[in-house]
Length: 330
Image 1 (cartoon, helix red, strand yellow):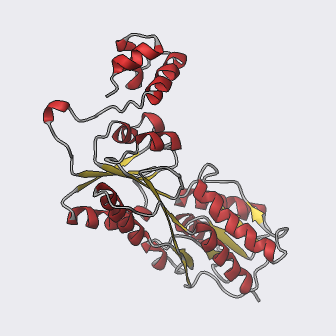
Image 2 (tube, one colour):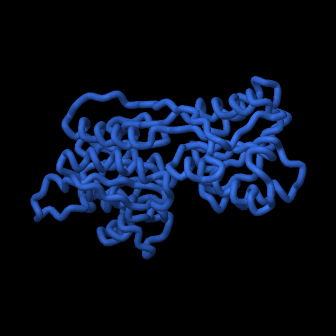
Image 3 (cartoon, one colour):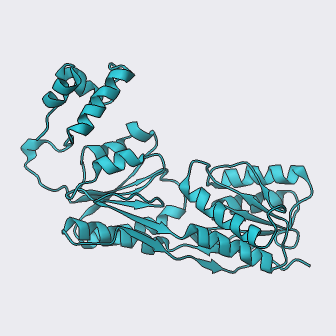
């Protein structure tokens, strides 16, 4: 078993320097730290976050790592995960990856402080995930695909869902359609945007779309981007938002300016969060199976812990939910 002594020997530094580097201590300069981490990877070093004198082979805990714990999207996802983990006699520990590679969430992965992890966080790198996953420490990855042993990837067909939503707007007679997007660094954002763009191109409408600056997947970003669109004048007849929270923020912005949804502008979202059916007008959106995806991720984790063979990739379908925020263009 590789120890920090082995790393120190390969890197040509002291044991204390290796210890500082592995614990992200700023006493070690960047160049030396990179050399130490490279040696650790080459030697397949894995830091154990559980003290050896505890003699515990399992924490009976699964970690859920997400970019941000706030927001209604996570409620159904967590419910699906939690019901499965509890039925197996395990605890679920949810933590935020704010801080990226230096976050406590990443330490749960690299130091094996839990038995397995479900990761829905764009700022946890592929390198960390690949080097953390082991037979005794499987990882379920949501909204991203990594081809790596002991990692299972579970995606929603975001591109098809967005394509379906754009097709619906076009079918309702809309030709001038704006798209308000999420974070440019997110793979999820690109897939939803690609679905929209393909639908527009297939109908010869790519010159009619209006792509706005990228924002965040939250209500405030949807509100502010919609305010900018209003300020530009010459509103489109319809707007697609990257998710429901942004769409709800947009509805609030239109209401403040006396612009009626859907008679003045039609709106469509994505995710089908619980609030989508209660806003006024009720939001037409693309439903993704949040509870089912969480339950599937947890089931797959336990199958991997039990040594069962599973498929490495899963892609769940979406469904268009028609409510009152879209009307036919006259």
